Length: 189
Length: 98
Image (tube, rainbow over all chains, first blue to last red):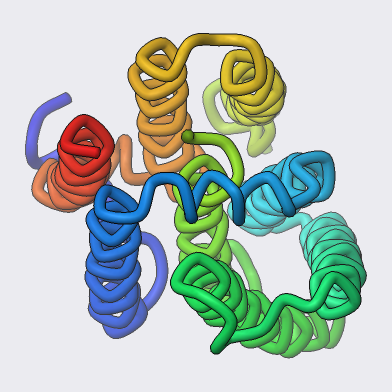
C-alpha cells in the first residue's frame, strides 16, 4: 500500500496519546511484575495456584468477543448502518458487563480465600494489576454507553463517526492489555 | 438516473471486511484456548516461548484488524508492534533469569 493511500488514524488523536500513555504504564507494571517474580519464583507460583484459571480464560474470551463487537460497530457505522452500529455497541457493553460480573465474582472468591494487598508480593501485584485494569474496563463501558446512546439518537453517520472510532480504540486497548495480563498472571509459570 | 455500479454500492467490499473481522475473532478465541492448554500441559520452557509468542501474535492481530492500524500510516502500527515486542522481551528475560 502506498503512503498516500493509507487512511487517517481512526478516532481522535488525543485518545491515541492517552492510549500510548496507558500502554507505557501497563508495560512498566508488567515488567516490574516479571522481574519481581524472578526473585520470588516459589511465592509467585504458589500465589498463581490459588487463582482459578478458568475464570481468567472466560474473561479473556468475553473481552475478545466484546472487542469484536466494537470492531463490527465501527464497520457498521462506516456503511452508515446506524441501528446495526448501536446494536453492536450494546452487545459490547453487555459483554463488558459480563467481564465485570465474572471479575467481581473472582475478587469475592479471592477475598474469601484471604487474599489482600498486604499479604504478600504476588497478591499485591495480582490485585493491583487486575484492579487497575478493572477500572479501565469500567471507564471503557461508560464511554461505550455514552457513544451507544448518541448512536441511537442519530448522532453519528458514516462521514462523522469519530466518537465511535475513539471509543473503539480505547476498548481495543483495554482488550490488548488484558491479553498480556492474562498470560502473565494466570498462565506463565 | 443510472443504476449504481458494483463499485458504488456501499456494501460492496465490506462484506469482505465483516468476514475478515469474524475470522480474526475466531482465530483469537482459538489461540486463547490453545495458549491455556499449552500453559497447563507444556514444560516451563515450552509454556514461556509458546504462550508468549501466541499472546504477542494475538496482540498484533487485534492491533491490525480490530484497531484498524493495518491501513493507517506505518508508524502507528510500528509503535504498537514495538510495545508488544518490548513487553514480550522483558517478560521473557525476567522469566529466563528466574
